[in-house]
Image (tube, rainbow, N blue to C red; front, side, top):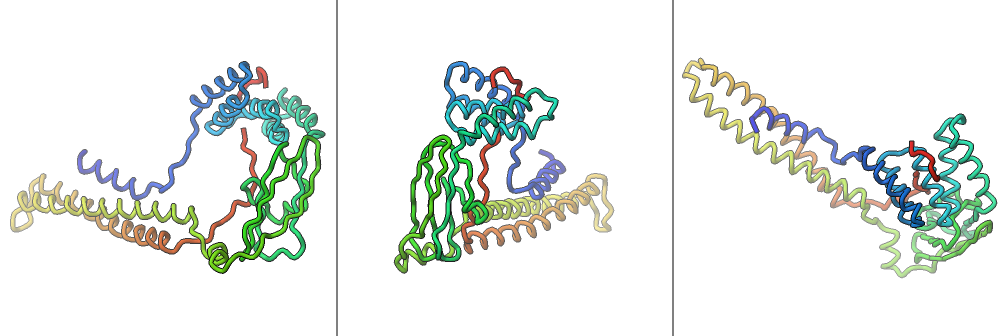
Length: 307
């Protein structure tokens, strides 16, 4: 790698975002979609749903969502299927034949939808959190009949200074269930401190490691380019006289040395700041930030096209 190419790579390394963006992959998505269709023909609906779901993640398409909705319905996940059919109606125009089909399929599922209402007992302390199947239900979601898939659901109540309370409830197709949850018993002092105190945030620690890595990379680039500056200085000394008159090699060395010096200085500054920030995030920790949104994965039947 020549010096100018190295400089370009170093600059890109410093300016690139720390998190890698997940791009689309239409070719893989199409292959997975076709495998999902084959699994449907074989009656292997769990495998088919997994294929459709991954296909839609890699390259979202209404046809994939439609096939996934049909697959989820065959597995008895009527709330998930209902949500996905409704998603199709929002993603395709009314003139598209799939709009009418999806509308009818969603309407046919509505009487089968189980609905679960979750409420907190009066007097629950401030800061109480309710989680349904691992996802937090915000205040607006409480005391509301929400569609869920048939089967067992795990409800968890967390409150400052209290032990976690867990309850499992089962609902069947078309059933409406209301559950009132109470906080757990008082936690021992040490247990309470652990629950109420600061809890390291995985997100914050992740960014701490990312920044530390960027900082280390910056310092490494700064060191390497600094050494290269010294090499260019020797070239200048060899190709310039005492009056600073240089041949072409010496002039090129001066130009390259200045560029490398700029990169080296910037690398040390960015690397030092990033490393300091990363160490701070790793040491300080953070309160765990709960998820506040319940999302049913996007992801539709028969010979309906993927796109």
